[in-house]
Amino acid sequence: MLDGVILLWFLLTTLSVAFVAIDIRATPESAVMKWGFVLVTLFTGPFGAFLYVLGCREPLPGLHEAYVATPWRQALGSAMHCVAGDGVGILVGAVVAALLSLPPLADFLLEYVLGFMFGWSIFQALFMRDMAGGSYGKALKTTFIPELTSMNCLMSGMAIVSMVGKAHVAGGDHPSSPAFWFIMSMALLVGLCAAYPMNYWLVANKLKHGMTTVRPKGTTPAMGAMPEMAGMTRMSGMTEMSGMAGMASGGEMATPKGAHIDEHMNAPMDEQMDEQMDMRPKVSTKMIAFVVGLSFVILTAGVAIGVILSQTS
Image (cartoon, rainbow, N blue to C red; front, side):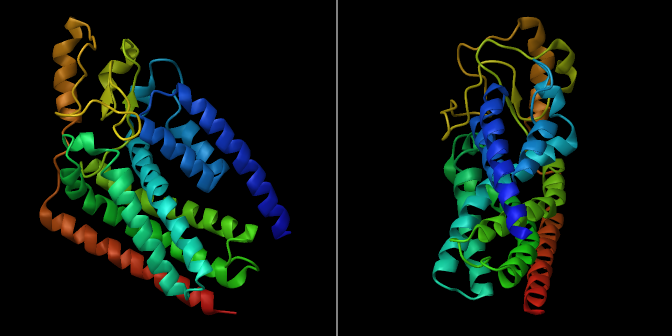
């Protein structure tokens, strides 16, 4: 029975990844977010494809800005970005731990460290450094707390599924078995759900970016979408995110030289962009410290539940 479910899952995942990889090429998103959705779909199969269609795919030409402006879609982009980056390091850690026959807690620790370092240093700080004025060092500093809190929630959900699955499913503890990859896919899916509320809070309080819109040079969004432009967007001339396709660096993601925006739109759009591009935290340092502590409580609870359930017969 389980073998059939796993086979069906892999078939659906293959089709889902192919669909997202092809379809997202026409979506006005940054390159790093496009790769993020492809990776998340690779990790979570048809669920990832469903989230892409529901949360990012442009419904009609020129409406992407308004479509992704809703808070829950902004949070989805943030959570997806977290899972995509952290997931690569987590899977590498899981494979290494399995090959070294590490005990469950050591396995978890290795996955956590590699997942956090890859997600923080590459997917967050490196690929999104233009949001920090092009400085990698500043990007590392500004993304540390958001990445830490999001990672803690992600791993709290993952720990339960992966520990139980590896302990009770035949072949689930070794990467040579399809069951291992199925368990890790389910763990990442549950981790995505666990990390979503934290990412919603982070985006709402300007501690993390959400979904973006990046259009080819010389194009503009639909007029009806203008009043509800999503945060982190550019109407025209914006190139792809640096590190993935070389977005022009410097400033606060300014429109590249040569890009054209109709003059009668300049004033209202500039005012709106200034407000939306403002990533100064909207909460106090004490509140941020509380949330960091809460994330560690959530992580500890998830690990404890995973250990207890994995030891039950």
